[in-house]
Amino acid sequence: MMANRDTQTEIMEMFSRILGARDDDVGPETPLSKENNIEHIDVVKLVMDCEKRFRVTIWDEDVLQLKSVTDLAAYVDRQLAEGTDDLALHDDKQRNAWYYEY
Image 1 (cartoon, rainbow, N blue to C red):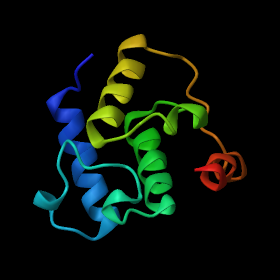
Image 2: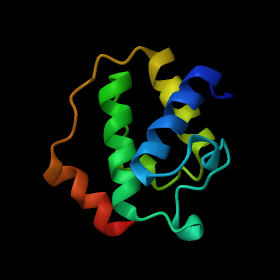
Image 3: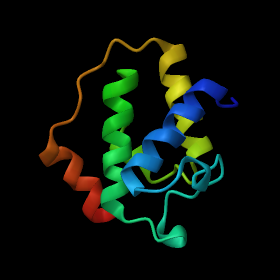
């Protein structure tokens, strides 16, 4: 499934704010890894912001599979399309579990 352009654009804007970068510095293929000097905490913040904004659950074990902004946007779109009723967001203690493994 391809990412919805609106979802992808919103996530790129969120990530730009988190990184303190210009909007045009973050693109669809921006990696969610150390390749771009992206810290783990920045990915944690992005995931949590996406969960709050889109009201979806992004499972900790799935985060490790997300390699780029496009991957994250496609994941969010899949969650929205499924219409999952499981909107229980993880607390910070659970969130830290994958942060330290990442």
